[in-house]
Image (cartoon, rainbow over all chains, first blue to last red; front, side, top):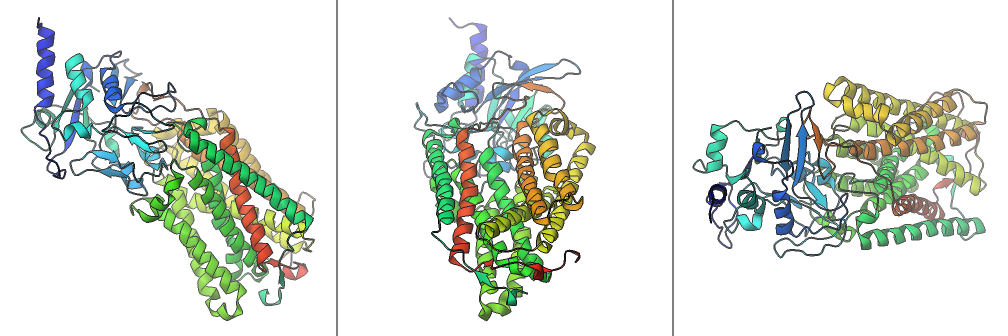
Length: 231
Length: 403
């Protein structure tokens, strides 16, 4: 039986899935697109970790039960204003900056930005120097501290290299939204909106143009592709 | 002066030489074993985490690399600045510079997540990266200093002596600037992100390099029973005092600037006041042991012979320098990134909390291995080539001559 909640969630799932179109094999990523996220933290519950768990499942982040060294591509940061007591729970992942400092500092070019704005690590030429982790203002990257098990075919993980959120580039190239976005829409309150910021017809571009949004550490001028509402 | 200085090789295979090489070889073997363990198991066996990504190996590596460029200063004093009294020391200065750099780079490379991909680092360059520039600067430093050493040793290359000296001096300044900029270019790390990191690192290199040089010179002369008058150590320890003062000046400038920025009061309070081990190492190690005490020894006239004072001050500068690099590298990372300024933050990824770090024994072994590599290269260098003066008597200059 479909209730009102399921209807709302289903509409959210359609909303995030609609803008993406599959990229043909051999066709390069295009600068005409700028993939991004808009996250409404007013819909993010403190206890909700649906996006985090979806990321772990999609990326095969089984971990070793060692919180200090296990990888986390997405985390929930609980933020509280000490002056007012206002609190938010904010999903933080790679912000896919237009001017990514991790790409600037990487000595070999392993840290790279795709034409469509997705920031990735080429783990074939990553030497594991961790300078990108020093440079990232969002602490968005993890180091593979040990051998990894349960890896997914679309995300081979190598001990001794650096990794982070890929914005589920493998799904985007197939015309699907990132796993966290899809899970949030299906199993939570649809706080995450994914789409092409360069496409004026996209829901995300229209919402960003219409409503007030913020970016974490906007003062650094990195122009992240992830925007937030409610913080 | 260098024309009348006679240089002799160190005699190899003596009991002392063999004992030294065996000891250093053992340290290197242990370090390689530690590397094998860390690379085989992965970095989770070290104290490094996703929060403190650079650990004790980087403290040793940065110290050695910074000291390397500073060790060359003794040669530059003689050649670039025309201080005749330093000219007999130029060859050892150049050798030690290369040796320290080799030791530091070895530690840096062996701590990479994928040290087997060193060839990738040598063939793939992102020229916007100061790290990539440093790869070129370090490699070039070796070549420039080797050429400089050649002009010092071969009279047929005498006409290239001055240009080589100038090139080496300029190169070393750029190299240390590059090392400082590795930290200076990190805008989001509150402990760094300042242009003063570059001159601070140059001042650090002057002090560490001269201290390392004094220690190696004194020990090698003592172990090979070469004579050294009091004039040279007296001159060197005064020069060391000057470099230590410069280091203190740039350190003070860095922290005063930080304190002036309201947004950086948190990290400053952490380093200067309530940062636990980092605060203790700052005041006790960096400022006290590595700054004020060597100054007192250098200029206060503690009553000991100049050679002993030079040794004492140098040991203090080395230990204080290691503390200083710890405070910069580890202390700077221990302070959390501020994603939401003015807000309190917490997460499963240690947001909003000071990060703890305790080095593992493996890291200590690797770091000491770097020092051992530098000393082996130095020992082999003075054994194979005529780099060490046969004696350094009173002819090196007057104790009262100005530096």
